[in-house]
Amino acid sequence: MTVQRLRRLIGNDKVIQLQERRLSLGKNLCWIDVWELEDLLESVDALWGSGHPSRDVSAEAARLSERAITLYKGHFLSGDSAHAWVLSFRERLRSKFLRLIVRLGNHYEQALQWKQAVEVFQKGLEVDVLAEEFYQDLMVCYQRLGRQAEAVAVYNRCRTLLVSSIGISPSRKTEELYQSIVNKKN
Image (cartoon, rainbow, N blue to C red; front, side, top):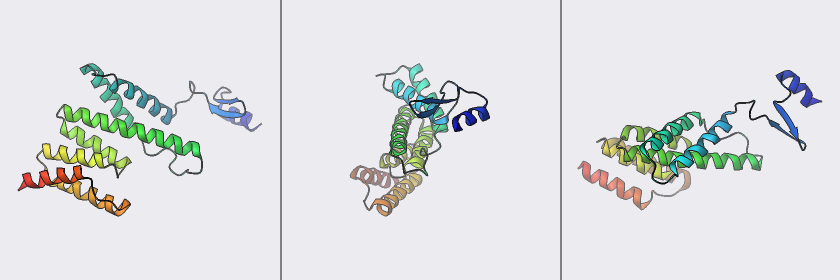
């Protein structure tokens, strides 16, 4: 009865589907941002994973990646941790998103587009502030842009967050990168 009322309110009987005592939305009748994001992430994964992509494939992968970054608004149902399926789906999306950040950032680094790479790695840190790899990449980008002070500030932020959040120091790689920046600065 409740499903029938909901269908009447929506004005389309096919939007709400009931199969084997489970409710779902008609994918071909509804646009859901998380469905769009998941489709984009899978498409981008396929494009980046196609071996040595051509310039056209890389450009398409970058375009779709930028679209996915725009669509990703944070963790899926961040206020709901009571259901295992929510946690599982949230982590799967997060993992795919972070992998996308690495691939797109590396793409911009290889193309020597340092400013675009900076923006991408900063977006990654908005999602996962403890992703040390993103701090390392940011430090490299700022160094290549000749902005050593910003590279040092990124290191300090990384060190502070790692120590205060999980009680560990930055990795040897991060420390060596920091030392190379400081030594080059002097």
